[in-house]
Image (cartoon, rainbow, N blue to C red; front, side):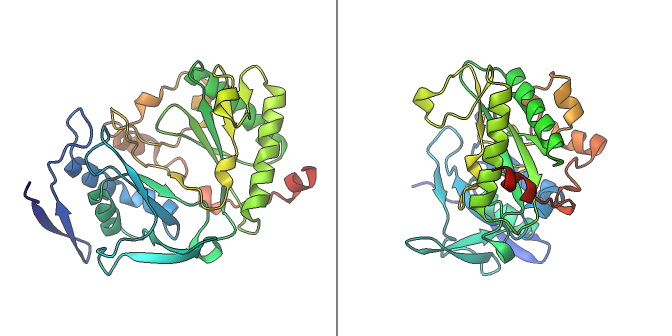
Length: 302
């Protein structure tokens, strides 16, 4: 049986036990130590976005090339300083972790959480999301340029509806567009509003966009405009989350002007480039949570 090597570190005022720091997470040589260091370094940028949000642990205990699993319930062995929030589901109550500090980020990374998966709502208004999302997911025969073109059509629709969207790379092959909201609309209402936007986009750009839910029926040369991520209980890889893909890509905020150039490449945003980008541009989503928007007029159109 392999010996578990534990290292005790102090992050702010909390003692964090880290184990097997030399364990390989990415095949190109990035280890658990790299994973933990990234999340402690990125903490000032990611924490404002995920603070007070229920998290779902997506764990890769043996690296990204091995099996992973989702864990919603905070494990019994978690330190007593890990904060949780109980949320009722149809069959049970789940105690979700909330991340308030760099120590919790480091502890999550030590559990093999490559991605930071968070809800679209916060603990004080759990039934009312303060962010909506439109997730652009290209089919196998679609290109990233197709994704960028569809994103620009979404921008035009949002402009027409007098809504502001904040784009970011998904960290894989897609684009996420965040739309900050006043937390007064429930998940069903938000899904309906985003569904209308998605339908307008598809009606306008049917050559490259689809809202066909069934993968087997979906045209793989098109970009899936997924508005169903706004369903209650859904979580997704958040801004500045690493992704379990070779090259250690990161879900990174981008400017609409960058999208308009149609020259972005998802591989450009990764563990090796993120801090230089932040140094040059700063956090492009810094005002996202300060601009909550009303979608009453969109719901009237529905």
